[in-house]
Length: 230
Image (tube, rainbow, N blue to C red; front, side):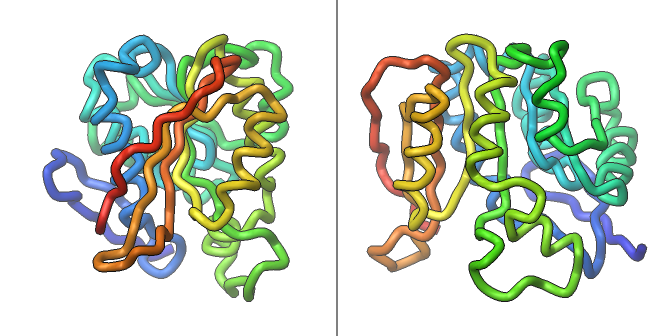
């Protein structure tokens, strides 16, 4: 597999990723910036143990490890090629002592007693499209990253609820058009939406994406924050 090494602006990081397979985009940066902007409000969660579901090459925990120097992370990735790159990225950036990479299907791991209720925060940049929505990419890495082939929204919210400690936070970035479906699944597993920000393409009045934080067993009531224009 041919790879490239990227140096994200404003971060002291070097990140190796496939040259032609799945490559990260701006979404992990939007998600981690959302968390950073709420760092005082969510201190108890941020500085507890954090879990990343579907880490790819490790971009989210790498960014968060730089933003929060004392936090610790566990990252799950189903594709062995990507998890190997994530492990290499930890060593390259001297973060192996703070981030653990697990090669596994999170749907299976969510049943592990040792992980149940362990994490103060679960973060995710999941596949955005159901299996029957649009054409599947010929590249396996891109297929799994974009379409819900290895777990749908119901699987994801159920797993997040099992992994989270009481009052823990589940934070994800997701298509705005699936908001109703997302909230339905969250409330089914007692993850209460608390903070929501819509993301608009530049000069568009229509949101394309959203970032949402939900609290396990939280009280009803959501804050709709100012939209982000990109």
